Length: 92
Image 1 (spheres, rainbow, N blue to C red):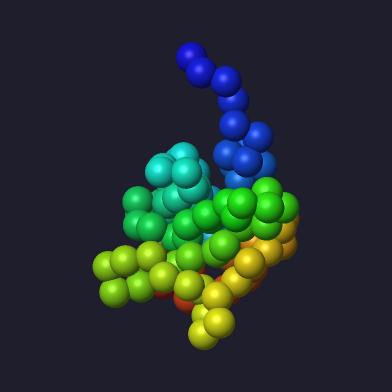
Image 2 (image 1 turned 90 degrees about the horizontal axis):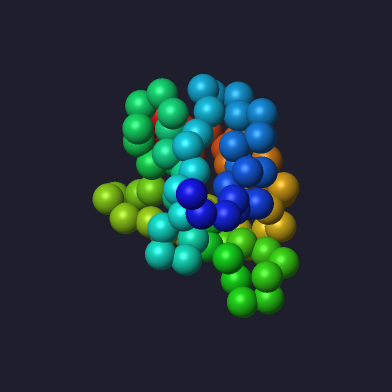
């Protein structure tokens, strides 16, 4: 098996309040899928600086910026934002 991915490990270890998520590395980012329904929850896209990730949500059958201005956050803050924001969990 390949080497472990520390970002996926941190996503998996997070205390998700709505049934949990499965994280997959897809095309240079991380897709979070509801463990309960299999629906998309969020996408985390690493930025070139390496410190922050762009948070995207599933909207109208495509990934788009979270909120009216988008969200760029460090990983722990991004996970807390996703967990707390009801819009991410509409299909979950």
